[in-house]
Each structure stands twice: as structure tokens, then as C-alpha cells.
Amino acid sequence: MNNKILIFGSMALDTIETPFGKRANILGGSATHAAISASYFTTPIIVSVVGEDFPDEHVQLLKKNKINIKNLQRKKGKTFAWEARYGNNPNEREVLATYENVLRDYSPLLLPEHQKIKYVFLANNSPASQTILLDQLKSVKLVVWDTMTFWIERYIDQILKILPRVDVALFNDSEAMHFSKETNLIKAGKKILSKGVKKGVVIKKGEHGSFLFTHSFTMHLPAYPIEEVKDPTGAGDSFAGGFIGFLAKTGEVSDKSLKKAMAYGTIMASLTVEEFGADRFKKLEKKDIRKRFFELKKIIGF
Amino acid sequence: MNNKILIFGSMALDTIETPFGKRANILGGSATHAAISASYFTTPIIVSVVGEDFPDEHVQLLKKNKINIKNLQRKKGKTFAWEARYGNNPNEREVLATYENVLRDYSPLLLPEHQKIKYVFLANNSPASQTILLDQLKSVKLVVWDTMTFWIERYIDQILKILPRVDVALFNDSEAMHFSKETNLIKAGKKILSKGVKKGVVIKKGEHGSFLFTHSFTMHLPAYPIEEVKDPTGAGDSFAGGFIGFLAKTGEVSDKSLKKAMAYGTIMASLTVEEFGADRFKKLEKKDIRKRFFELKKIIGF
Image (cartoon, rainbow over all chains, first blue to last red; front, top):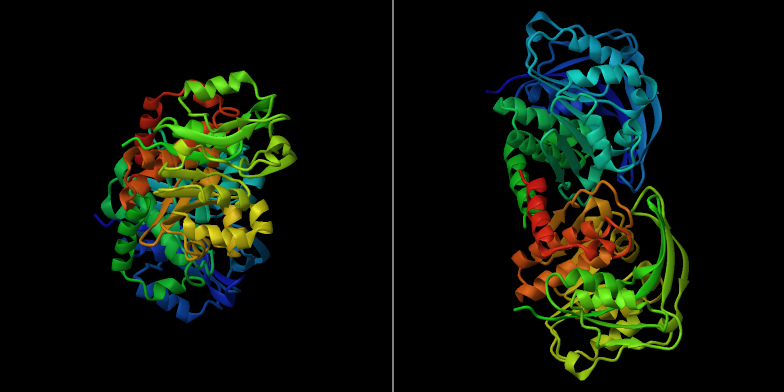
């Protein structure tokens, strides 16, 4: 099938500090990580914006991975930038600074040729802009959606209106607890699902793995074991890219394909964190993903 | 095969407070939880001590589960007692009080008929008393061993001498990090394994599942999803009971049986936490365990 995927999210220049070092102005952003990850499955189309400072080197990596950037706008001003620090627990981070820059007044506008794309990932973004994008879609088949606590705290009503238009909603553990007001993640997942989400709710737990709650089954998958998490940034978006990438590639959304998509999400996240930013993908081949897929099966098997 | 299991650990009267309520003087202790769990697989023999106040009702539950208590000493004085409180995170607890009582001067002495038992679980106890017990074993085949941070902080040298006599060492996540001085659990597990442990190191992560590190493979298993963790006490010991119970029952210690033992450990722990103390086992049948075993397979499958 090889359906293309529309990915709406941020492109950023990240400055990251972890126990393994510090990097400034590296390639980041939710759309970036998701698209690079998805590019190992099918063709991603990025809907986003960058500033005049966005380095050509970064554009080249996207092109090398055959990511369609026709719907990527380049505006006057600076690219969205973000600074964060991680300690020894990769599940916890401190955001040091956020510079909205060109993202501030950006409203997504789909090129006519992209309005009939069937597979869409709405990465972390304001619910208002996510709604604007959803309204431009003319024959969508699968919407995967992400958010973060910042939006949950401020725009819960808008999010509750988006959820019934979403097939699979992604949360990390703290976001899910925040949104559902439940401390048990199984209760949290089921409660969010009951808000009208069409197919499933994924709760990502970083090094502890992830849950998938659907109307017919629950899945609990451990993480692929990584000894050195050099930079956790983008793990969630890489998960999403692998998840929707696999579904778009096969063109089938069934219980079985959703479970496999969870495994591919898990694997893409495990790869991302092995290097800073998107560095791991500079030398990643499809066979590395396939190998890890079978290893994950072995690691959990009994 | 149905090999019997020797279980050396504490028997206690627990006072527990969780978001689901409070119970005073309920049946507790590491040997108790492990033995009740193991009793669904084979015959456990408890090596422990209680005081004059130990209620007959508790003895009856042990007898009902065909637990051998010939090596259980009843001494003058009060039973070991323990008080703890759990908040919304079941992986964190506050110990409010510990009363050693009859445990203070207790040294385990095996009846001659128990010295040739092949399967042994050394539940949490002082490394000194664990060594005394190990020295009395004449034809042991499999030693599963547990400890806690209290002993790691005080008797690291003794523990390092015990580990090469141990087939499988159990830690929870914080104990493993403490012992290994590693924050990454995969590094922690491998480092502990390198201290001479014969077969494997298990790291239990509560609601997040568990790891098994052996000299030939790594396993990462999620927890069986439980929506209401009423009382997390004894989950680790129930895990151990199911783990060694399955191995003793089959009489085979191979990669394959170790993996299945992990699954049975996971399931016994998931049952324990559904009620206070050992209450869940008052009405548990073998078919409930079998059912959950196959459910766990489905929950992780892709």
C-alpha cells in the first residue's frame, strides 16, 4: 500500500543537556522526529514552519530520508527553539527555555495535493491549530494525535472536542494522569478512551514501555532495553512515527496491525534515544529495525 | 516432579494503610507471602518463627494451603510486626514501625528431614542468618535469594559472599540501583550478575514489570495490568513464590523454564496486590492462575 503520511508538528532547533553531554541547535521538533522515524516505513509529508536560520544541513537529512517538505513553510525570523536538561532519570526533564519564534503566528495551510492524504499524525501542537488542520482533511482514514500537559492545563474543552475525531490518542504517563485525574494508568487509559476516541489510547512510559487500550483489548509492552539513554528527546514522536508509519505502509488498521505498530513504535523510540537529536538515524538501515523487532519478540517471550 | 521448596523468611503481623483502607495485625511476612504463592505449584516448607500471639486463624490458612510448618518455631514473646503506609504510587511506601520481637535472637535450624531439600528460597533476612541456613543444606539444586536496602547498606561484604552461592538473585528497582550504583536498570542487572550469581538476576519494578538477566539472555516482562492495587505488600515475595514454585514443580531449570517462571511470578504478584495481606488467596483457585497466564501472553503479544 505505502500510503503517505501527513505529519503536522513543530520543527525546532534544540539545545539539550544530558549526563552524556551537551549539544546546541541540533535538529529537533515533534514533526521532525516523527517524520524521520516514519520515513523508514513510507513517505512522510511535513506540515510545519522554520525560520531563515534553519541550517541547510538539517534540510539535507530530511531530503536524504525522502521526506516531502513541499508543505514546509520558511518564514522571516528564527526557527522555534527549545532548551532542556535531563538528569539520571530519562523520564524526567527540566525545560530551560522555549522560544516560539516563527511558530507564534503560524497557521497550517495544506496544499491542495495534500488534502486527500489518508494517514495523519497530529504531533504536539495547540489544539486550535490541530483543529484547523483536521478541518482541511477531505478523506482521512486514520488520525493519530498527540498533546502535552501545557495544552491539557489550558485547553481541555478544545481537546475534548478533538478526541472524537481521533483514531489513536497518544499520551505519556504524566499527561495521561493529568488529563484523566487518575493515578492508576489502566484506569487513566480506559477513562480517556471513553471520551470518544475511535480506536485506541496509547500511554507511553519511557523506559518502562507502553500501554495500548482499545475497545476490545489492552496491550502492555515493555521497552526495548537500552543501556545508555544519551538523549530521550523525541522518543515519543519517534514512537508515533513508527506506529503510524507501519499502519500506513500496510494500509490495514486491525487489532493485529495495531499491536505490531506498538512494537515498531517501541523500537523506533529505542533507537532515537541512543544518540543526541536525530543523529541515530544518520546511519540507520531498515534491517536494523527488523532485527530489533525480532529481538523484542524474544525479550518478552515465555 | 513436584519438588518441595524450603522457604526461609519472616512471618509477621502487618498493619497496613493504603488509599483503599487500613488493616491491623493481618497475616504478613516474606516467608508467608512466598509460601502461600508457591503452594499453588508445590509444597512449601516454612522455616521461620512466630510468637505466642500468632492467631490460630493465620495458622489455619497456611494449613489449608498445605504449607508444611514443622520447621516453624513458636517462641515466647510477640510475633515480628511491621507497619507501613502507601500513597497513590504503589511503588513507594513509608515504613512507620518495625518490631523485631521473636525474630531478634532467632537462628534458623533445619530439621534433619529438611536438609536435603533441593529448592530453596531465601527471602529477605539478615545475610548472616541466610548464610547459616545455606550452610545446613546438603543437596541443594536451586537457590533463589532476596534482600533489601537495609542489608545492602550495612552488610555488603556478606552479601558479596552469598551471591556466588545463589542461582537467582531478586532485587527491586531501587535496591538494584543502590547495590550496583547504576541508575540504568539494564546496567545494574548485568553488573550484579557479574558478581558471581550462577544463573540470573531479576529486577522487579512493581507496576512496570520486571527484568531477568542471565548469562545468555535478557527478558523484559510488563506487569499484568491491575486497576486497583489495594495493598502492594508481599508482591515481591509472591513473585518469588510463583517463580521458584513453577521451577520446583517442573524440576527443570532451563532458559525456557526460567522465562515461564517469570510469567508465573508476575501473575502471583498481580493477584496478591488485589486484596489486603494474603486475603486474595482465601478464594484463589489454580484455574485463576492458568487463566491469567494465558491473558498475559495475549497482553504482550504482537
